[in-house]
Image 1 (cartoon, helix red, strand yellow):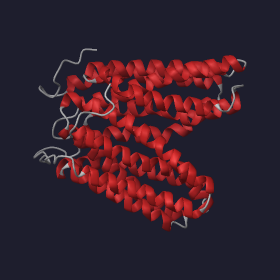
Image 2 (cartoon, helix red, strand yellow):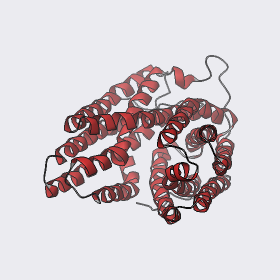
Image 3 (cartoon, rainbow, N blue to C red):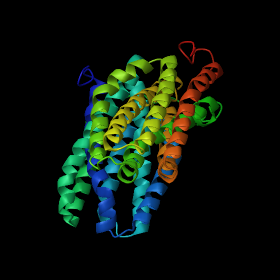
Length: 407
């Protein structure tokens, strides 16, 4: 496995992603502390503000991708990164909840613009048979960048001073602008003309693709198992030591970095991607069952089940991510990659909005039975993707799908 993609657009995208996500890692470790301890917002206000911002991201996803198709994705991505940097720097002026909501929502809009353009840029600048692999490299790089940023940010938040928090904010803003400068080295991808007839936002009228987006978005709730439900489960419902939370998080990060690119090989075709999604649902379901069982065992048994369950979870995570890229690229028409990638991202944002309520209510509110309900849910979601992909292949005009969708 190469540590970097071959020279060209994929490598430039990887470098830009590394810089941008280091900044994201800085902000992730500092955001809650800055907003509560320095700005003076309550935890509830922070939660409400983040939910509003996430909703803006959901609503802006498809129009942002449409803009990238019409104007050209490189310029839109660079503009989105610069806007995000400027708005992030504007956080130093926040003194109230309305100001936080305003800047947070505007930043979510800029992020949606950048995200939609990135998908169209990959589709336009990277050969079709390398798109899923490029996405895999970018995801592995994202994990590295966020981890590096989180470690660097830890030194600043240890001081717990306003000056330290402001320094992290400005560093995050600088990372976004620097990523924009790196992206200028990418080749220009020509805009595509809008269709002369019919609706402009065709992705929102593509019912099979919307069905896939919904299923994939709901499946993406599994990311919150590791970051939200499992830490609280370990701390409050098992006899495992609390340090297991850090161990499992580290193992997940390392395995994603090492294995995401190889895992993507199974999803470079539509049939392969659909099967990978089905396997992902099964693997995550197994993880949920093991997590549930860990609450009824003494410490050694609990540790063992948590470790095996986490390995099952990361396996499902790798397959799920690769499957989503393969299907979203494979079903998009050549003149609408931006809006289709934006719509695909809308599903993830929806899952991110729902996950805190769903996974905590079931896994923590219901305990072991709740974990089993989650297992059934993820198993069902993964099983539904192949028939939806078949439906999508049958619904497309001749020539839109390059191979039979036999799953």
